[in-house]
View 1 (cartoon, rainbow, N blue to C red):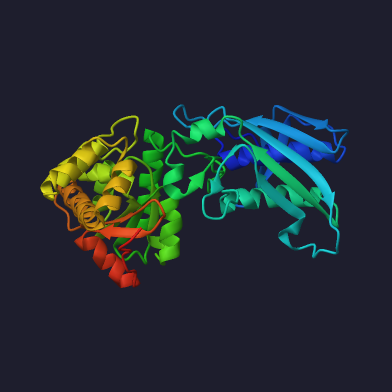
View 2 (cartoon, rainbow, N blue to C red):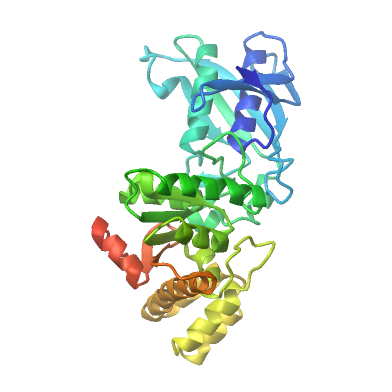
Length: 383
């Protein structure tokens, strides 16, 4: 079944541009609507592509698309995507089932891992490219694909990419074809429906974990959390906490990046940055409650961001930094439980586990520590 879908994630738009360029390189006519197969859904969708042309005497082809997630505040909306493809022959026999037929290169504006210098690509994005390109590449050849985001480097400065080790541009991430509007009421309603379905399962234990964002989802899997007990949530955390209590959840764990969950410690339960921030103010107040020395409190209050404050504090006094963020985790638990108590009386315990910019589990409240102990997870004491 081939259909038109809107609100597509970045991996889909990248795949469409790459496929358009590859088809032209192989001598096929340009198609302004690329048929992109989604292996996860076992169906195809038609994705608009702006253009595709041969250059350098037909040795290279360039495909251009413009991302449209349908989300007004999405950083990648209208992002220009260039895909430069080149067919090269292997110098030796290569196993046709290996990944050697495709070489992906991070061009200008595309995010790379700070540790490996490799293109930052989600498993979903890689699967899309492999599924849609493999049949186009002749045997004993490989396709070199360089992806370029002309404005990616500037846009990346407005994201938290660097906090997770992504440098030089925007990462090509996403776990599904359709973009989720994390700040929209529609997304909240869909998440509540998923929550109710999980809680209605005959084998539901009463335990549930809310993971905040893609990094939280990936980390939860690495830590050994049961997939049945994990729910990825967006920014509407307040209503979701109440919905969890109403649906019979007895033990709820919040797993997220410290720069996101700190908002809950300040009583902010809709965490989209366009609606509310106040994170530095919250961290400063908690630093006062922790009785940090005045010079350290001043460093926090005058920092350009929470991440900058964290790095400065950890550099000057790692012990005080650890104590402060441990207080943040405990306060997230306390404020979350108080939020639910405001709306009703339920038997539910909320825990919090926070990870740092390197995706290491660093801090947890008392309830969060119980969850980690049950999984045999030890908190990191150093960044």
